Length: 268
Image 1 (tube, rainbow, N blue to C red):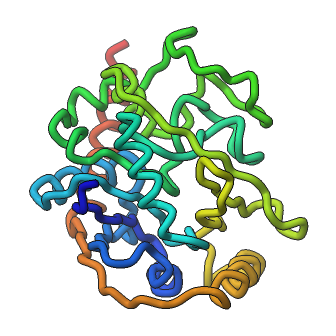
Image 2 (image 1 turned 180 degrees about the horizontal axis):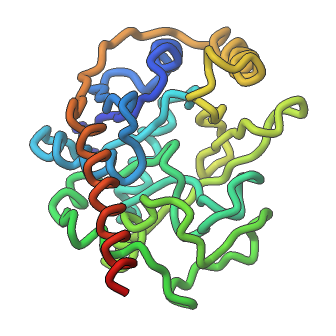
């Protein structure tokens, strides 16, 4: 199997990242996109391809800072399965699996996923991708009958859905993982398992609230305590990317759109 594997996090809470990243898969490069200036979702994905396109990465693991790995070595087994089965994307559906995620089941939620980065990077076309934020009724043929939760096949809730719709329209295969609610006292966090039912990680959600919201901070710390007792730490400093002009460009973009809207209304 190819050894050119890396992990990327778009981080909004560096205090939480400092605690969770030592649990990340060991022996691979760690990259960070600084999201403290508002960069996230599809903007982060576009920036990711810009910054990583020449880094000789074959497989890219995407994990948020509120992901706490239980057994990080299992991601390497997943990559082997993806390689054998010619899968391009691996992750958890954003609808029908996690109780409070009732959106589109044809896409994965980006809190944790694995990409065949080399393959996708060779195809990458930002303008083309951004035109795919739509879904046609009956377009995809996934068997959704076994999904436990609610979902919306027409949902466009997340702006990054266009990335996954684009890949599906390119004929790329998705390997979907299961997720469950592991704690009776916490109906927010979920546990993601591999194809054999082995726990890979907990996703706590609400990374932004860690350290500032007492409820979520305590809830996340409880899960940390469960994981840390059986873990060895590996402190590998990440390579950090930050677009220092992002917030300004985003402001100008929104302002320009407001002006265009007002002009259209005035001319109507």
